Image 1 (tube, rainbow over the protein chains, first blue to last red):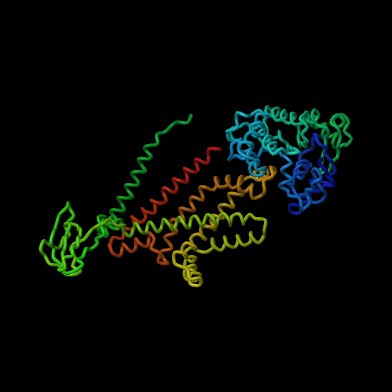
Image 2 (image 1 turned 60 degrees about the vertical axis):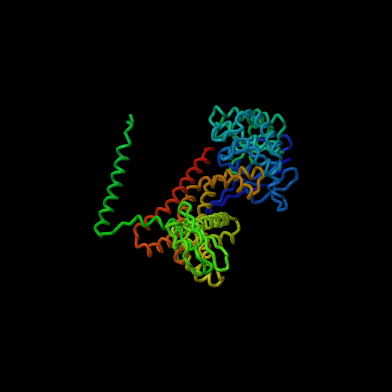
Length: 244
Length: 319
């Protein structure tokens, strides 16, 4: 479903050249759950952001369902409609209520009627367990609740793929569980997901494949059992010794 | 432990200081033997205008009926045609049986009319409103151009902002009236409004730019990741938040604009300051009139800043 070929992204700031994504090739099948792990600065977030064009890559190709992101004929807005994204810092729209957050893109992009979009929004809020907060502003919600709203907001567009960029890293420890539970439910329902995360338990339990990044390079691509028990790359071995 | 101290003695001190200043001012003016004549001021706000009522033909006053403080006069000419006039009783110039010639004043009628200060206030108000709306539109467009990816738009908007901010408004008004106004044959009001709105636009552009840049990139990214286009994201997500943030400097800019309209008096637009100066030449009471003019500017600006802080509080409900 997702095809990444020879992806390269170079950051060049004041003469300092950083190869954030360095010749990465991989693919994700429909319904597959990928977990991307690696030390900070390894380029895993940049890789994820390249998948929906938030970061423009330098060479290589990314496609979803055959639609090439780098093709100038591709409407990038139409492309992004099919790719939901959840951010580390939630990025809810603070000037709108929870319900309006979920309805904005449905209204502006999908042109859904008021009743249809609100019904959809309320059903999704019900699903992530915060239907009673629909009329509140995001600032009144806890971090965990905000992140669940952010997931519901992305789902409201009925995307084919969901990208998660360290969705639990900015949360208090007690709130991590509620967000991971929502993600697990999504995975069980067959959503195609790519998650950058530090939650090794989640990776072990839910992932179909684990990708390990370091210095922009994809060093390991294996099933979780294989990756956690018998990592091949020495840097992956060192990383796992640190985090487990 | 922090102790709660009473605030009122300090407020009392404030009052004492203000009264002291007013007293010193009064003493200073009394030294130069200035005669305060506040009773002359109200007529420049509103006065009773008189309209003369004249006889239309050589005729005789055949009837005179007093109704309250008005008098109804009936004139009849040689041909027997009657003319009825209603005038103020105490201005009546004729008695029953008098003969009047064509054009003779029989009396006057009085009605309230706005004085020059009120007309000046009205001119200042509409100049401010029109220039403010135009300035906001220009500023919004220019501010977005400053942030545009297109180098030409960026360059042009930067040049405009720097040119306007780097030259005095007074010079701009002169250029607009004497140079551009002459070339394009503009009226003085048009030249004045153009100068004021372009001047305000440059400052609003910088306020808009700062506001948009103060919204974290994550907001735009979240909107774009949902499939919104760049302009939809700007319109629905970034600008509403930026507007909330720039409301205080924006209000300050409009308050400045109201005060800056006083500068167009140099191209002979009779706004509040110019009508004040005209009134001074007839009333010989410069101090009173200038205080009134200052008071009228305050009368516009105090509610304006009150409104801005009210709006600010209403928009803050989502925080």
